[in-house]
Amino acid sequence: MTTRTARTEKLDLRLSRKAKQMLRSAATAAHRSVSEFVLESAMARAEETLADRRYFGLEAKQWAAFMAALDASPRELPRLKKLFHKPSVFESA
Image 1 (cartoon, rainbow, N blue to C red):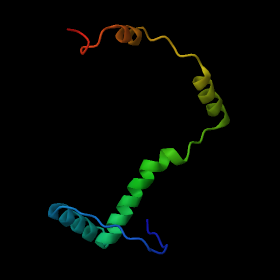
Image 2 (image 1 turned 180 degrees about the horizontal axis):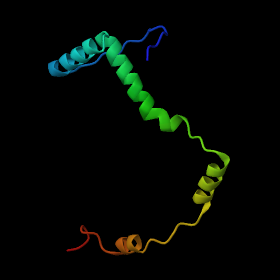
Image 3 (image 1 turned 90 degrees about the vertical axis):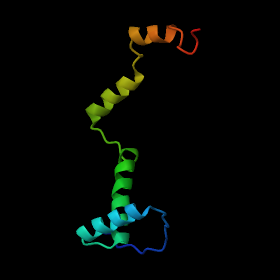
Image 4 (image 1 turned 30 degrees about the horizontal axis):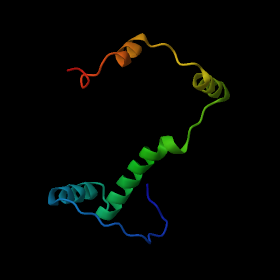
């Protein structure tokens, strides 16, 4: 993933000597500069992190099932109900 947009912003980063050496080694192995390697790696991780927040696609049948699940009454969970009625370990003396 190479981005060809103008790079006008700067990001400073403090790291340990060991971390810097690892990044240098990885960048060398990938035939990239450390800056390119770090930017590409960070952007890939950012895309993974944000993917489920940007797009949520379902086909019509799946969407209908999803909406039905949201609209349905909560199901009875006896063990959970029992748990909430028991005193907490912090409440017991």
